[in-house]
Image (cartoon, rainbow, N blue to C red; front, side):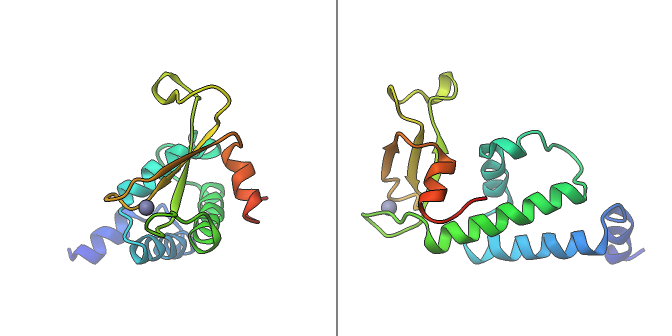
Length: 137
Ligand SMILES: [Zn+2]
């Protein structure tokens, strides 16, 4: 049995459309040098997606596509690092014992460049920051 046949069998649960969507997503990740592990971390940061574990259904893929579009929008139009001009990622803060940063703060903007890691803290939550940049629902 060829590896194509094996993949075909093991991925049979996903529709052709789902595989296409995944391919799009992987291509976008690849273009920006993100690994699938980066993406898993990103997804875990997004509250509405945190319930999604294990197998993906059509609805999940719709959401992933939505988030992928938003991620692409953020990369294009979102906050850039004032030090090195890399895109800055939004992280929620003060939501648990591991991310306490000071009273009144709700978001951290962290430079995606691992050699820079410039950070800013905001009183707005991540959704409000996205809206500020014209991204969101
Ligand atoms: Zn930077």
